[in-house]
Length: 492
Image (tube, rainbow, N blue to C red; front, side):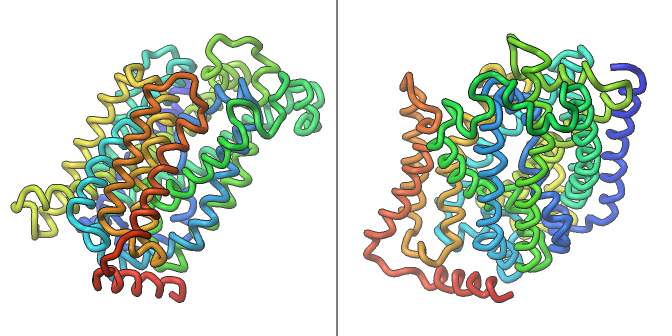
């Protein structure tokens, strides 16, 4: 990286902090801090949902998969996310917005107290928060790897740099800062992604025609929709996981729907995010698919995108591309911090310590900022130790994807009236069962990737439905009332 690249990157960081300071004036209470006062328009919520759904890991762990296995990455990642988000837009997203309106929720786990009971809510809140620490730490490590490739700075320095910038603007500006930074970073990503796409086409033998002709020149299997171990079964597994994740099982994505101004706005936001996932990754991932044509037999394929950018981009544009990667990561890590803070402040601390109940608006907001700061600090520490958890891919894909299912099944299905007989026993049983399957598989060698990621969520899904089916007790009136209010969301 040259001086101009560092200037571009510094300008981007300054823009982030400036948006945080602007948002600071709009945040008057915890509702503003966590849900933007329920005033997010559909286009802002949709773009934020989209860019909050992936991070710099796309340019590291996923770039490595694109290098070694090719187009299958789009099929099992972006395409399945698009389908999952479209389903979520119609069946789940409106219910989150409706919950904020009639139940005044600010965190995605807040409604679980009414839907199930206190032990269930606390189990999901605690385990989900711990899981998110590892996921967010892995994303910080991913962007640090890229900074190392681009500039030669140490990975530890990169983790601290991106963590501190995220810590500053999300702590002062809350969700307003987060979503506007999402929008700004999406514009940066569009410019950087299209630039990289065009430059790679210009450096391929057939020019623009390479969009179609490049595939036959790639290593065998890289042009296929499915390339072992990323099989049809793996793609269906990811579709199932992504449905629960992008419906709100990944809590920061639920917040985008909760903060929408109405159920219909939440639905439109989900549709927009789905369309973006269907189209934009085809451009974004193309240089990653082409990487084997420029760098053969890379010892570490996860460095491929960084090496491509360093080889082809002139001064200034290299900084812009790196800024877009930082933007992706900051978008996700900051929204994670904001959402986990809401769970801690709204659902954990008041249940453990009476002094945190019935706080004034001023003290509520102060507590929100303190917990956001502390969570971000912990994720920086985890990121610095990412190698102990299987590296970036291990933290983000293996650990998070496999553990997400057991936590999200009772949360998402709990919104649907058809599963109202599945109460607290079904919820806790499904969580424990899913986590047990994950632990067992960790000790099994020679297992398929589809089995490793899919078995925990399938176990949770089956247990949740079966235990509910055999529930001979009646459905509590509070649960019936909850679902009655949620049904109205389809007509709102």
